[in-house]
Length: 371
Image 1: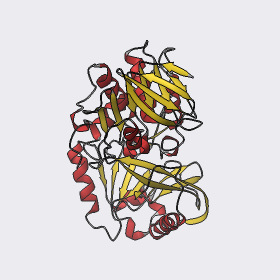
Image 2: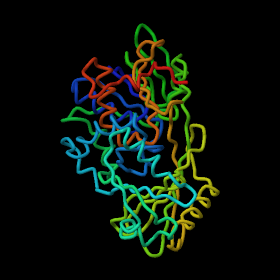
Image 3: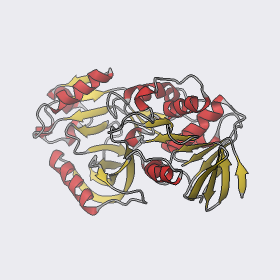
Image 4: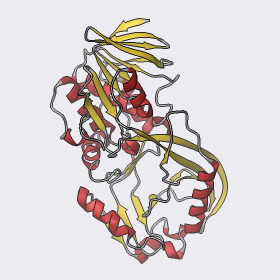
C-alpha cells in the first residue's frame, strides 16, 4: 500500500482522532489519514481513562481548554450521542493533611472554578458520609459541575468524522521510518507506505520517538503510570456517589454500577509500552482506602494501568516544530486529554489550517521553553 494524503496523523487515540475530526469539520475535502500501530485505536491511554470531566483538573492553565470543550460535551454535534452523566467532584481532607483544602481552593480561585465548602454536618449527610471514618468527615470541598464521560462514544464519534467526511484509518501500522523528500513526508509502516506534506505527531507516550524518526529534537515528554483497581465493596457504592478525591492526592474513587473504581492517583515514571498495574501499587491504594473508610473490600475484581504523558511544564505541546518543516506536535495531554479533546482538536486544526483558534494557543506553543 502506498497512498497520498494532505495530512498524516500518527496516533489514533483521542488526540489524533479529535484533531482529524476537527480538520474535517473545518475542511471536509481534506484527505486525512490516522496511522495506528495497534489493531484498534485507543488501545493504550484513551481506552484506559477514568472518564471524568472536572473543569479544575490539570490546574489553572488547563482550565481554558476544559472550559472551551464544555459546550461540545453539553450539546454534542451530529453524530455523537449524549456524552455526559452528572457526577460532582468532592475533595476530602485527611488527618495528615491539615490545610489541604485551602490549597485546592486557591487553585480553584486562580482558575475561576465554581465550588462550595461542606462543613462536617453537610459532609456527613452527603452520599459519601456513611462511608468515611470520623477523622475524614471534618469538611469537604465540592465542585458541582462535573460529569462522567462516555469515552468510547466520544472517541468513536471523532473517528466517524463529520457529515460523511471521514479520516482514513490504518491499523497495525507501526511506523518504522520517516523521511522528508521534496516537501513531502514519506512514512514507512508495517501496513505500507504513506505520504503527506504535513505530519501530526499525536503518538502519546511514543511522541518523542516519532520525533526522532522524523529528525526532530524530542520535548522531554514523560510517560507516567496511573493505576486503577476495580473493587467489590460492602455495602455497594451508592449510585449518586460523587468522584471522591483526597486533598493530598493519595487516592480517588468513583462508582461503576455495583463496583468501585479506586486509584492511588499515582504518577510512576515509565517508558512507552503496554503498561500493566503493579501489585504493590494496588495493595497500597486498597490499604489507603481502608484507612479512610468503614466499608469492607470484598475482592479486587480487576485492574489496569495506563500511561499519562506530560511535557516538563505539564502543559500540552501544540504547533509546528520550529526546526523541522511540516512536523506538527499534538502531545503531552497528560490525564486531561479526554476532557479537553474537543477544544484541543479544534485548536490544532486551526493552527494546521491557518484558521482562528478557539482559545489562545500561546501557553501550549510547541516551541516554548519547556525546562
